Length: 633
Image (cartoon, rainbow, N blue to C red):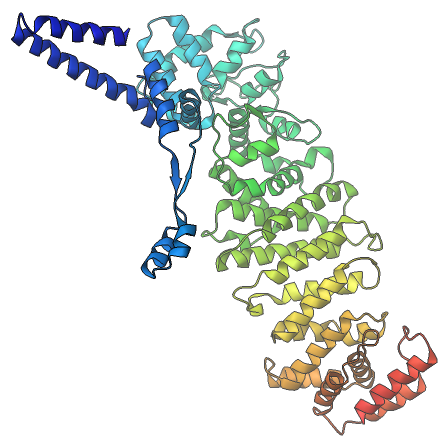
């Protein structure tokens, strides 16, 4: 039709030119202007997918442009220019622009993708526009009901629309038509039979209602949740009716993992707001394993398991599911809810390291949740809590290993890892169980702790962390066989700390009487490096003051300890004997007190008894004796 009109106007200009030249010029000029504007409007959707002026000619023009004009990419532009300046024409050919056929997406597909990207804003604007331009009460009623199903991001934008006041008035009118006064409680309302679905949609639009709504006879879980998530402006005479279920108790019941309750995010968010405002946490005993008091454990478990998604900045829009379980809804809660959760957890667990106001509220809740788990494990209650704790702690360690922290954040995370190690050491009911999840958790936690250095300075780590590492080493020593048990990685970490001359590491070694421990346990090659680094640090005395150095030397030169140290230093794996290194280590040890009587006791003790339980033959025993006696003389 457009083409036919253009041909008609062109023919009219040709026909009038001999008869009325001026008139033909006017019509021709107008035709050119109109069709130039038409061509511009036709090409606009090619560059602006949301443009409404798309015509069939636009589709043909778009396909032609995509086929005629190729897609050119030039990733090696700098290499091309460099080779051109150097006159290296053989290399220039390799860095020419890459020409390929363009993607043949249709305009309809591109328009759909663009609308999806802007759906959050468009939904709010469209509902506001439809409500304002329509005078049909039925249409306005549908707009108000549909507003309750919007994602939270769109609902926040809808509150900014100019027509929001009129929509609120319409909402109140519709709500009154769905409610009636209760016969037993005249100051309260109850749903009108048959209007339950409409009432549920209306309650999601606004979080406040003047009176309590009785939901005893309501069979719909969604409507019951919507009623519970509605705040009451005016309390009835005589206070809150006893027949109403407490909102905090309702929330505690539905977040239990066994229920798998799904609700719109709006309901979850409002329930948490109301529950936090009513201090939901004060009605539970966090130290009890009874089903009624597991709210905090379920809450912390959900937070830790979903924490990785917290950092992605998720926004509840049309790409998110309509209904969510509680663990998924946590990702979209506002910061004020997490502030309340953090305050409660930090009070119960006695946390102080997570109260740094410069840390994000999510990270503070993360640290406080792990501190609360450590508090629960220390109670040595029933197995119910343990089943809820170890899996979230594994998730927390996986998240920590994948992150890079600022120095301030690393301090808080270090405290968190220490809390997890405390839990692992406390939970030692059956350390012989190879498949116990606590064994793997101990191993992974120490690995994370070991890798979390602040610019490579071990002094950033506390005495508590190294003490816990030594505890893991002693608890799991020789009890768990298999690939890399927790005691092995604990030895490695303690040896690294000693090698880096961390004063706390030497204090932990002395406080835990590690030489006596190694002497009274089955020999492991992991102890060799620990003792070697300890003796090297004592002999160099780089990081130890004079008083502490004297204590360490006195400890080393107890006769049995000296013999233990020399025996471990002289140990080797298989046939790989590094004799110069053994001589160097024992010589450095001997130079501390070359005339000490402990050396004589050491030599005589070794000649009388075989210390190592792992020596397999008399020949091997003699070989070890000769080796140590040779180094000690």
